[in-house]
Image (cartoon, rainbow, N blue to C red; front, side, top):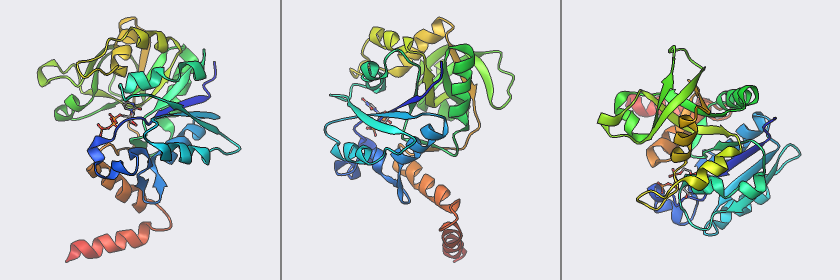
Length: 269
Ligand code: UTP
């Protein structure tokens, strides 16, 4: 079945960006002149979606204002509310009625990709196998504990390889790390994920974790990963956002050259 819907969870509290997020949601913080949310909407269109659903909170009315003007002739953009920030898995379960019995993409707006290649590969993988498919990447051992960590079958080490996911461990302690492969913020789900999310028990912090549903799919051998080398900017922290702004601005035709000249001058002193 073709994948035409993208879900963008944007109902979190953005505590790592306080005090900025008292006034501006994290997802609308600009990458130079474009909100992070717009990058993800553009990626969804590029990956073939004509429907984008943004999960937001009533405490973030500017997301709804942005969504109201984000639709184009290529894409319809709408919001669904998450009444309380009960976790990423809970945010995804909030779209069940609107998505219906269809596959869908989930794209985290605090991870900006250099291009839509990974999302396109995940869609193609789903359309071929019918199995939920998630973005993966290899990281240095010291970084694994910050992510969802996966054990996979028969990984040859090649870039852009599709692998079967056998086990998922959320933010493992160093002793519990199962590989150097972690989950990144692009997923294509079969609708069965909603049933899995219904079975997830709240964590100690009362959140419904998406990784618990992924672990259930992996346990049933119903989860594929693609180990990607796509450029990725983690804009979920102030330092990550700053790096994304500089790197993406340096690539732009209009301001890349003057920005580069200014940086060279600054560091030559
Ligand atoms: P994060 O955990 O990075 O976002 O969730 P956060 O909770 O807003 O950030 P901090 O930790 O307080 O700084 C990843 C994505 O999932 C959304 C967030 O808005 C973000 O885009 N999210 C998270 C929800 O939509 N609902 C939630 O309950 C939690």
